[in-house]
Length: 178
Image 1 (cartoon, rainbow, N blue to C red):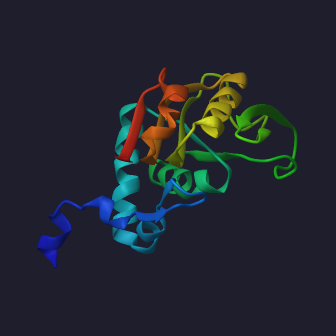
Image 2 (tube, rainbow, N blue to C red):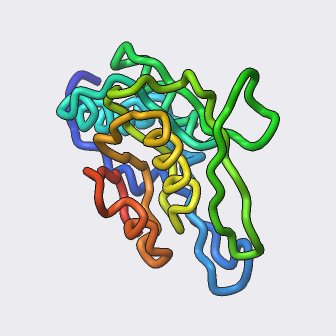
Image 3 (cartoon, one colour):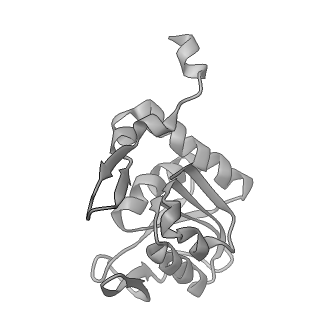
């Protein structure tokens, strides 16, 4: 057992692939198998923790529920706070808003006005980088509050959807690229 812990993990074995979802010709990737294996999930988030430590991160912000999946354990391991960017009426207290485009219109994310302090070094995280709409909106929310986005981190990047264009001005980490 001792030897197994030191062996490198092939994270790609812990990604589910769903052909033709949500429509024909689309291959959807999901981290559910990674979440089912605590050792693999811990190792994956540890990679983001290392990335964050190098940037002296003081706060983690992630969009909606999927941002919690990555952001909360990273924040815990770093001993810093985590704040979600959420949909309307899902956060108590005063919030600010940023809109982003969807293939079928627009949506918005909100962040509490006291979530990020001016000058605070922030890492924006999510499980997946696809088109980058929610990540771009989250970055703009952090910057509106005076936070400094020192990086973005993801478990999976779907490169065909060109989300990296939205984060090209920031340090970037992705565990797996498809």
